[in-house]
Length: 299
Image 1: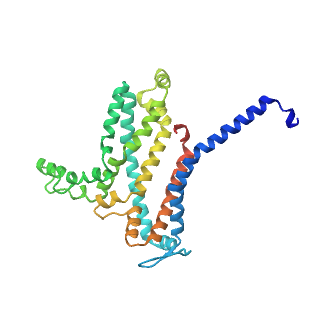
Image 2 (image 1 turned 120 degrees about the vertical axis):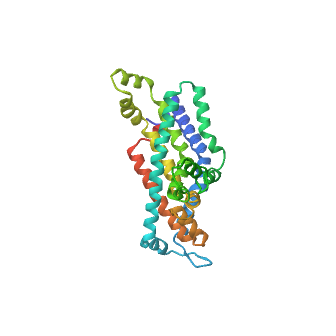
Image 3 (image 1 turned 90 degrees about the vertical axis):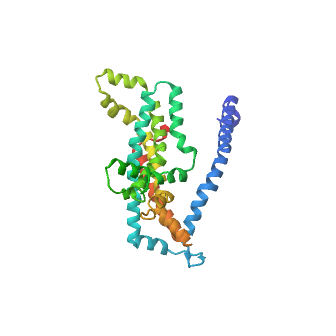
C-alpha cells in the first residue's frame, strides 16, 4: 500500500506513538546526564588513573600495568581481600537474621498499619544521626572501662576487663551490624507485605505448621527482598574503611583501609587500581545474585 493510501487513523496512531517515545526519551535524559556526571564519569577517571605511574611527589600520566602487577603479586592483597570478605560474610549473616526477624514481626504480628509505621520509624531513629557518631557511641560501651566490662566485673563473671570487646574484629562486626541492619529490614519487609495473605491461609488449611509456612512459603517469596538487602549490606561493608579503622584500632585491615592508606601516601594510581578490582569483585557478586533471584519484580 502506498503511503498516500494508508488510512488516516493509522498515521495518527503512528505519529502518536512516535511522540510518546520521543517524550519518554526526553524525560530520561536528566537521569542519564546525572548518572554520566556522578557515576560513569568518576569510574572512567579512576580507570584511567589506575594505569598512570607515580613518584613520591607527583603523578605521571602514562599507560603502565605496574599498579595491577604489584597488586596481584603481593600476598598482602589476598589476605586483605579475605579479611574484607570475612567482614562482609559475618555482617551479612547477622544483619539477615536480625533484619528478617524484625521484618517478620512488623509484617505478620503487628496488625494495625499505624503501629507498623510507628515501630518502623523507631527502627530508623539511629539513622537520624551520622554513621560516625553511632559507631563511636560503642566505644564507651565496649571499652576496657566501659559499661559492659564494669558490669561483668561487678557481677563477678570475669576478674579482669575483657580486652577483645573493643579494637577487635568483634567490634568491627558489631558496628557493621548496627549500621546496616536497616538496609536488610526494609527490602525484606517490602517483600513480606507483598505476600498474598490467602496463600498463607491456604498453606495453613492444607495442614502446614507455622515453621513449614515460614520455610516453604514466606522465605521463598522473600528471596528478592533478601537479595536486595544483601546487595546493600555487602556493597557497603566491602567499601568501608572508617568503621574498620576506628573499631579495630588499626589492628585489622580491609580493602577500603588499604585504599585510604595509599591515598594518604599520595599513591593515587595504586589506590585507583585497588578501587577497580574492588568494583569488579562487587559487581561480580551482584551479577551472581541477579542470576539466581529475580530482583526486578521488587523494583
